[in-house]
Length: 238
Image (cartoon, rainbow, N blue to C red; front, side):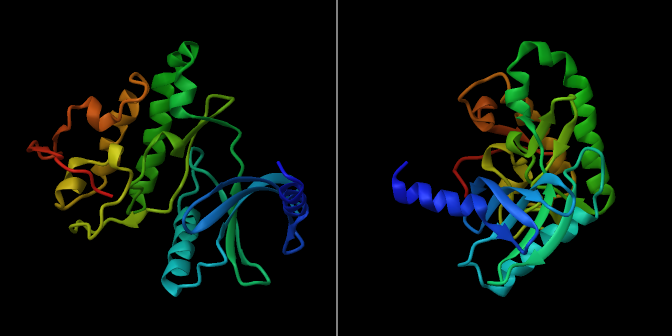
């Protein structure tokens, strides 16, 4: 790392947001936001802060961010990441905070053969979280390995509510989720319900066995819808 990069990183690490959150580490960045591990002076603990980029100023994008936070407040559950606070920085960047999860994603967790004995328990925990989300009239839409963290005490946590939407039994206007894990109804453009989340469990488990193979490839790109109708995904959709 060059001297300039080190200086920038040092100032970043020392930055305190709203006099409360000290940045400790940058965990990731996407097209619209950044995610940091921070120290919360008020609660005396390390948590996660998710913040929109400075360039994101569109009202619709900010509304979507607020909706993500709101949906997370509706689903307090032992196996769902807990959300804490919502705020705005002096330069008008919106953010919210949530618990920091120190663990592995579900696929990495099960790469250790000794952990496979916990499979049934982990699946029950995930289904419990999904059932609670569905009971609130919501669909997660993005069940995949990186969104399921297994903590050291073998406890599963479901996260990332950026694609969550209410169930309205309508035809999706856009394809939601990660291509390798979406239900065939989504790819075919027909009406969907909570079962699209349940479908994602199948390729999720298959990805544990076939390193480097996409779940869709693992299934030969042949799928069966919840109604029993067979269909095929013949093109890549993003």
